Length: 511
Image (cartoon, rainbow, N blue to C red; front, side, top):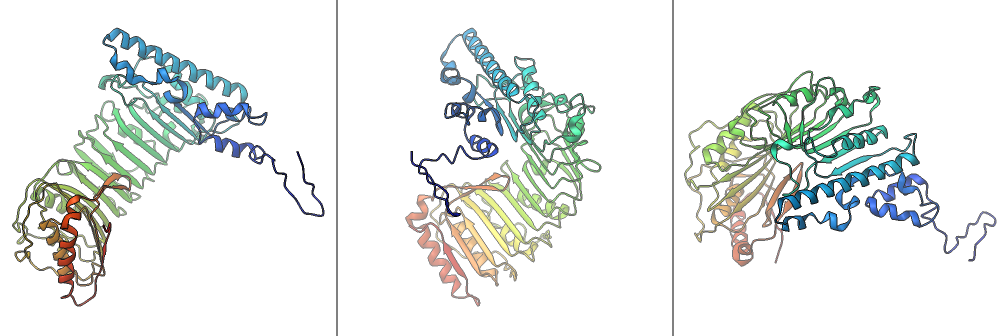
């Protein structure tokens, strides 16, 4: 091997020097964090430098893929056994193998680092546990192992996605809250910031609640809040909480967030909590909220002066009156909103202006409105007049529409709709459009009434909201390519010729 020498301040590099191994140990640990536990352990054979790097991991990932062989991990094959006894034995053997291998792995980590000097950034666990079943004591020790190493984030899912391992409703693991509060009251100096729990029961005792005091992000999915009032006991100690999500949580009839609980909460998400009957929010810190469910069926009380962004998704079909009732309630409860997202479904078509003589609810501060409307036959567009009247300073309107069945009806002017000139709307985006008559009528009506409109974007790809600010897009419908685009293009440009100010059109997904 040839080596170059350093002369007079000039450094020449050797051709086969191992720069990766020369990196500091923390950087090598970070590199291994992108590998599975099984893959990281295999790097120990590379050299003496790599021999023990895997024993100081940044992330602990405890799941079947990492700790079981392919035969044990192939749990879908268990369903082919007709005998219930055989299935039970296979599941027990699989659980014991998982517990033993995780315990052996953590023992090796402890022996290499007996003084708990190496920090763990994240603990992830994905395995099925049942209340009173095997491994509950081991689980508490695993969480304690991570807490001793100043873990920042724990993500624990106690049910794998297969029917044989999914615990029944009454058999959900009771999460050991006491593990967050050790004998030395170390929660005062805890580094734990982010917690996600899925498929478990949660019944924190007030004596153990200080363990949640440092958490800033709490995500509960399919969690049974035993007794119904446990969520209030939990939130009473979340003094640092800034982000809270409750998704498909059981036994939560009332949700109250008020002083002195959650004084730093900035975002709240409530998703498909079907037993929720009352929502009381008194918070000066709350800035954004998402809700999915039957909004019109719950009692609400808002005292949230800084809540500027709100998302409301109705999961049940409703008629036009239900949609307008929801819109009116929000205008009364949250007049300070600046951004509003509404998602609803039109199961029937009502081609009459039922709101013509009604008092229009007003959002005096709303600047950005996103509406998702799904219809079976035709879109109900009576609401568009209400939006223009009720949002006087609206500058941006996003319409995500989807019409399942297309009727071959010629375009007609919406002469029965009252004119509603709007002087602030500057940008309109319509997605999911197919060239349906009712969809074109919406676009034309907006073009006729938004006098300061500068840009209209037409995108046939349907946008689907995934939650937490994330969207996905579907493929273009064939109806759009078979003439819908040309029909809409012709009618919009025809209407634009009569406008006093020029409008730029953007047609996405050109063929």
